[in-house]
Length: 188
Ligand code: SF4
Ligand code: SF4
Image 1 (cartoon, rainbow, N blue to C red):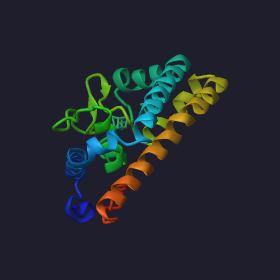
Image 2 (cartoon, rainbow, N blue to C red):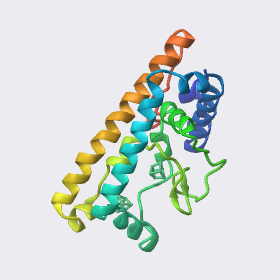
Image 3 (cartoon, rainbow, N blue to C red):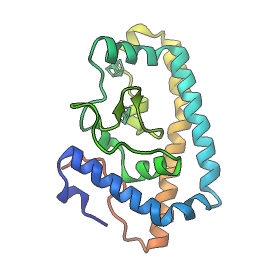
């Protein structure tokens, strides 16, 4: 296992290094994880929970506000460095769900995972899903915001359960030596 924190302090290099580690884990252990008794049912529940969150955000109008903020107002908060909210475990989860990562940062100054159609990954870190700014609270009715938060709870709980289970499986199969699977990168 590489020592991510010391070797790769630059945000782009850090996420590239984390992707490499996640890919190596997937190549060696992906099949085993996908044949596990507990993991595939959780993945199915997670996919449905993400869809339910997306529907709730679409219907409340939070997606629209982010679109206007990002595309029309040229603001947006998916900035460079935020990709490192993705831990190795979240990246591994994306690989288990069939996500292909970009080879390089497509939009300078933006998150590594930003593409022309928005975010390119499926399993997103908690901060990306549960962050709502002043604009949302000004434009979206309070009851709608409460509904979104309630629906998101299932997705975020499953994200925690799955990544904890992945860590547990990997540690038990590899002899507990895996480190830094939960590193975000802000401490570098
Ligand atoms: S969360 Fe707020 S700042 Fe970020 S893109 Fe959406 S509207 Fe813009
Ligand atoms: S939502 Fe996606 S593109 Fe935006 S910061 Fe999070 S991972 Fe990056």
